[in-house]
Image 1 (cartoon, rainbow, N blue to C red):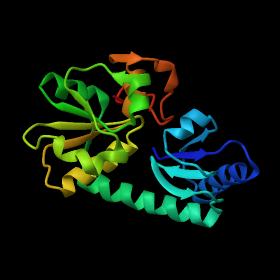
Image 2 (cartoon, helix red, strand yellow):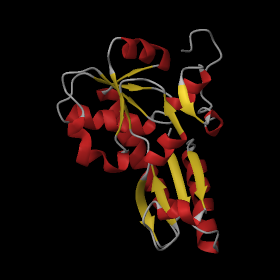
Image 3 (tube, one colour):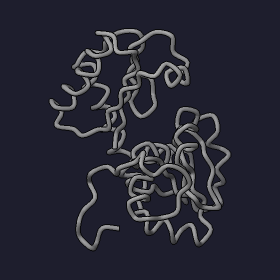
Length: 210
């Protein structure tokens, strides 16, 4: 699922940007995780001095001004296109299948930001963290001769990273759908505070959902 963050201390411009995000999603009939970041210390992690800031999947799109509805719609439409392209390139597996891959020696690559991992992490032996915000600089640390499962919070950022790897010659990479949110729902091992994830809302209720 696409993640949108609006960074700001609660000023009128920040509130307008947040409301514009909601309106853009409504007009596109699109679901996304929308997060307000108003804590100064949290904003400092993104090295920004002027607000509001609009981020989509941890990429800074607008800084220091209000993003209007049409502009946000353009960003989101481009994001949808990227996700659709990646879905044609990348095989996806569920958390239950991921468990089997891990038992067979696959490497998990978590593309969440470091503070997210510190708060809640996958409790598996063979895992590395390469944040999506710095992925292009470090993706070569991922071996090409191992089976690799890309993971994140909801499956969107990891899908993008997996598509990037496929486009750079990786042939043994898959994406784990629904991320750590579904991993927690299934009761698989984690370290940290599981209450910070509540799932993506799309879990089916049938026995075939894994």
